[in-house]
Length: 155
Image (cartoon, rainbow, N blue to C red; front, top):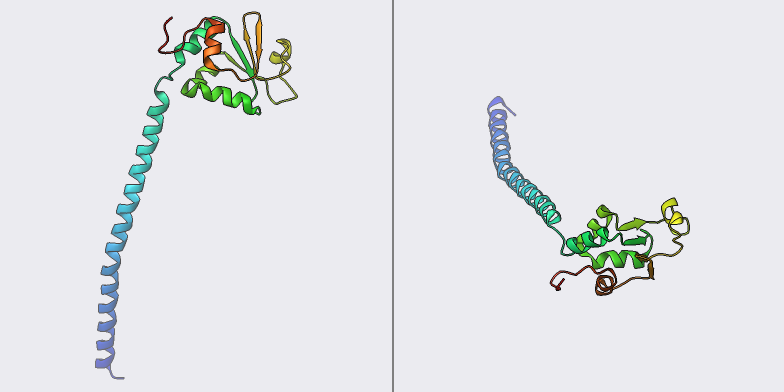
């Protein structure tokens, strides 16, 4: 192969390499756009979740009234009935913890000193005044026993 033929082949190779680079640019641009869109969606989801959690729960006032009347709900994170009871309060379940209405007694079989001191041996247990109510309870019963009104219910 002579010098001319070699240069001609090198030019062809350079041309094809340049064409490959130009073809690759739009693909990497597409990847950047897709990455940016995924990033924007992730940030929007995080903001939406944060704002949703900041909204007050439907039963926040009811829980506040229970706290004022020193009502206690003894439960454990391991107890499925306790978790079902908390779910009845919806977003206001975090207010149960914050106001001190909910007392964590877990783990099951090894109650903490607070629950032992309050003579709690089984969960879920509601203490309303001098009355103890064992098991998962409907909110309307808790309302009747405590004297606290539920939302959309006359005081």
